[in-house]
Length: 369
Image 1 (cartoon, rainbow, N blue to C red):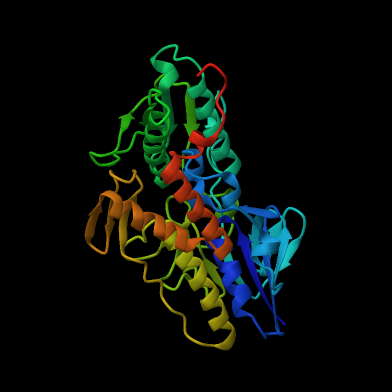
Image 2: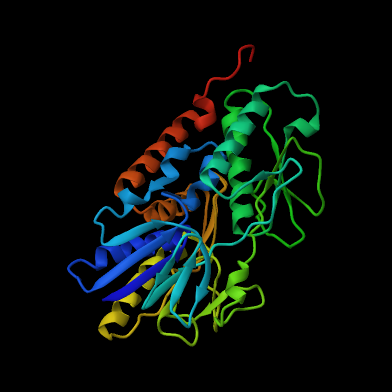
């Protein structure tokens, strides 16, 4: 009996589990387990849409029993705490999981959020941000500070959030004859959002009524305790076929994976989708002694979702602007959603948001406004 373990979380791990569930049909000599912390999974590429009021939280919640309904991959509710390569064992908070092949998807450890900052990591966090903005919009404007949103961070998560908030706040609130919010990005790194983005970049904290922590996080400490190769940032180094460098039985996917040589892969939800599918395929190939396929990332250098008239994207060397750029970005995100039912639900909410100005425009506001 061959044992495959998918350990970790995130979009790439979910796609790997689903692809493996489909690909193991008829293989009675293979047992696969997906170690995931929780019975539900958040589809994180939709977090900016939820925070900016353009879709609802329910569209980004996936129940693992429904996602892996064929049962060829067993879901285990547990948290990965370490890895023992000598014994080929994943260490969980509640049990140990032995493997012959491992698809490893370590998740970043986010810095602690204190002092009135709102976290931005899960669907519940994005929904809370949306509710907070609605409450501020319903309150009388006291001063300039009450109309400010400050986002702290410099990576993909922060950039997607501020651009979505800048457009979502301006469109939805303007449709209700309310003053739009000012969106600030607090970062020490050089960030190019383009001339179209209505976001103010600052290098120090400013007074704001809503403060959101969207920092990227760091690699978990247990990765450094293994003999797996890592870069200076603690990310796992993998070959073009996603095999961890120096090993044939461990594949890496997700945000803490780095290419050991050559140009870095683009950090987009589409790359996560590709990683998950390819890791599952290569794991199956390893079982039958076939060669592995390399990851050829889709040529997406930059996709910023800024709104129907202010979008900008660069795909396969072509620069797209306006509605075309935004449509391409949304199609790419929708294409990665694991189930057809969820795809339809998300696209339906986008269509509704286009007519009403977003979720905020449909929610009841306090009397007197």
